[in-house]
Amino acid sequence: MPLLIDSRRLDVSLPAARILQTCPELEERARILKSKPPQIVGANGFLYVQQRELAATTPTDSSVSILGSEDATTCHIIVLRHTGSGATCLAHCDGSDSETEAEAIIQAVKSLTKTTEGRLELHIVGGFNDQRQLSMKLSRQLLKVFHKQAEDVHLVTFCVTDINDRKENGIHLPIIYGIAVNVKTGEIFNATFADRQPDEDLRSAYILTGGRMVNIYDAEAEQLSIGPYSWLPFPNIDFWLNQEDKQILECFSTSPQAEPPHFVQHMKSSLRYLKDNPLPQVSVFPNGKPRSYKKKSDGQWEMIIN
Image 1 (cartoon, rainbow, N blue to C red):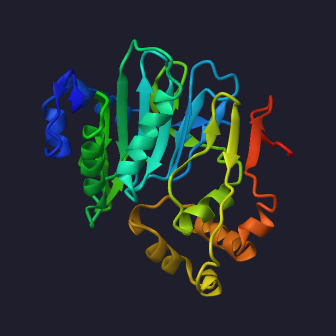
Image 2: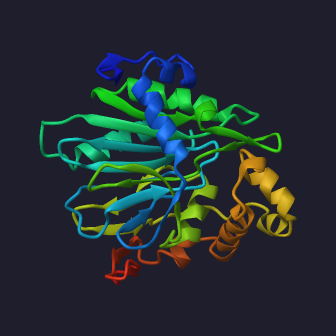
């Protein structure tokens, strides 16, 4: 079935700005989303989703009530929610395999939905007017792959590329870098995050070695699981660790001028993790099982010892 706006078939070939012009309510939602400063989200009830990850849960979850992701420059953050069950999935997409990722996002929501009442509502946020036009390509790609799905999908929020663009000293930057969704209410909001645990470096290292999108959360068990992952030793790791910050930024970013201040330090930390763990199946996952976590009462993740 086609991707829909207000129950009307969407022409996915249209530029983002033109799509908003065809639907004043969609344009107004994007305006309101951009107008509000980012809320700082703490650890209580929160699950952070990294690039090429997705997580899904329902309003009955007693551990996680907010899903969020940040540091999206050319990447896009997807939220898909079923209005009947409240089942909600958030994913951080970079265009590596959009078709498979869209299918996984829909399946994650469907697997948590036990009712036929309600509809699937889609929110897409991210990207800007980058020089290589990677954001524009990803926006169009995501519209097309959701348009091809068997289920009706209703586009509710669309704040991407030129809609999410601002200029500072002549340089194009995203207005919104991160969003969160309140699973209990369905509210989508501009956000930044104080807590990105657990295993931030491990999860980033997996992305650097070409890992595919993974579902990191079991809503029924209320348990977050990472891995098990395996990768080959990262090539020329010492060379990269000895490079200046500018070189790291230019070589590891799709949009060097738009990255947040912590990008280089985060990348170096992930590279050091790869250097220290060239064979993670030995040093990180010796028993071949994932690293699993539960939320504690203070909001921190506690590892489950198998």
